[in-house]
Image (cartoon, rainbow, N blue to C red):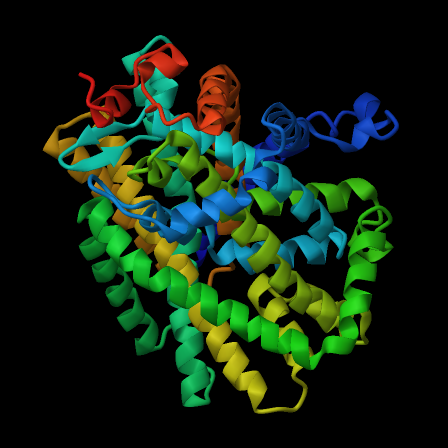
Amino acid sequence: MEGLLAFITAVCGKIQVVSDLFWDFPTNLKWYSGIPVLGNFSLAIILLIGSGIYFSIRLRFIQIRKFRHGIEVLRNSKAKTGISPLASFFLSTAMRVGPGNILGVTGAVSVGGPGALLWMWISAFFGMATAFVESTLSQIFKEEKNGEYIGGMAFYGRRLLKNSAAVGVVLSLMYIIYAILCFPAQGFNTVSAMGQICSIVSGTELATTHLVYWIGFAVVIIATVAVSFGGTKKISKVTDVLVPIMAVVYVATVLVLILINFSRIPWFFYAVFTEAFKPEAVFGGVFGVSLMQGVKRGLMSNEAGQGTITMPAAASDAAHPCDQGCVQAIGVFLDTIVICTLTGFVVIMGRVWLTDEADAWFELGKLPKFLASVAELTPGTAFNSLVTLLVSLCFGLFAFTCLLGFMSFSEICANRISQSAVFINIIRIIDIAVICFGMLTSIVGMDLGALWDLSDFANILIAYCNIPLLYIGFKYVKKAQEHFEKNDGTPFTSSVIGTKADVWDKKSGRK
């Protein structure tokens, strides 16, 4: 077993080298890194934040102007076909709000310093515009099948690139690979959270090989398979329940922590804004480290520009393509500006990295780092056990809802490649096997770090595939946005954008 784990760690290490190349290029070239200011910005950062800035300007900062409209769409949500905008929002939030909201932020702060949170905010603000573009595109080119709407990156990618079936297959395959690379970490997180909860309740630290972990393993697999194979509507029924619970519990728990540590709030903002440009030497001491960590972990959390949230966006029975674009922009806001900020409050206000225990804190894994910060904010109180329990519960739900989304949308992509039952079942078996692998690594005591490397690579790989498509399709988004803001009562149809949008022609009564 030790030999197998060593092999897996070595393979993940090789993947991390490639991932770093994608994330760091060309800052890893001496001549480029020597350029003042520009040398701190990798191609990935320029592409991600730069695209968000471009779309924000071209759409006249629609993420601000139509924020209230997005809320109104959620409030008046209903559906005749597929799922409602609100159900789509919950489904996308189930995938977007994951363990990265805790682990990612904690990792970003522990590597890049408190200033990483500022760059996370900036990338999220502009990422809201990117989310608007990709979600509107997914709505424009969605398709209807068996009483549900399906669409997303593979669908609009095919339409934008000369309706090439090969493009649709490649992009569908890319999503499946993305999900496979993310499954291990989510499986690990789900079963380890269940073990953590049982340890808190029992009052004893349970070994990872304890029966509880094996029971958790079985429960997660059965629940994931039972729900995810039921289609988008079935998954949305589950996420409609779980997402509000996990979001409200997490937000309420952290808000209580903030209130009882109210006096530390000014220092929190001071640390974030000063460390963003001049981080402490302990965090790398260079501006680029803080910047990279903020953008990298922000992307892992809110997924703006990756194209991974476009499938739940397409499933919505929206009144206008831009309605869902506004809704998905709110999703990025909720994920990063709200939930990630709350995590940042705990880690930064805990100030463990400034205490005598700093060396021990830096050696801890990401979740223990976060829990150690919680303990610092609730010293010597019974409340600490309750907070730890609630955080662990949310952490497990975050991971589980991510698994549901990945499984479901992997199957949609598999159907896009081939309708063969054999092929679909092969993808299902691979997905389940990889999830099992992730959970087993927790049970045998493998460190999560290597699995996190896989997710890093998956995130940037799929972003490089999706963002060029957004530029190609932006002309259709712009026409849709102009029609949307004109609001003259005319229905959205193919004539508005100058290309076929069959679902919208059908909705307007035109064939």
